[in-house]
Length: 107
Image 1: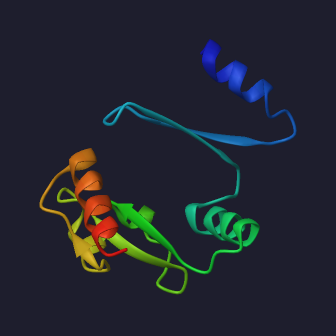
Image 2: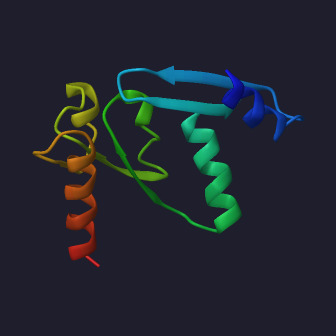
Image 3: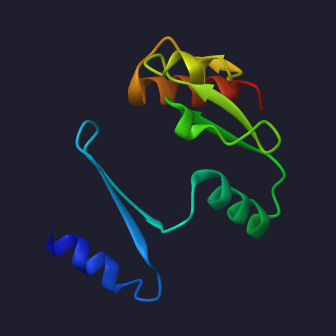
């Protein structure tokens, strides 16, 4: 598409993977060979952060307990839910909002 061509032209040095998620209406671009864990570790190093929180719905969102606390939305896979600190009773973005509100109360 024209939009993808424009986006890729902004990053000519990178070999990018494209992921079109029609279910959620998302287009994800990532540097080929990078996954969420390695990308998160790079970001953490750049920001000098030792732990992050990950809100997700599948094992592709699992970063490992050595770098993240994990939270699940209600529609998450059972496998992902088994690895989380908290499971929202709300689906999708409402679940994300629920989790963020809960975490803000703990600050």
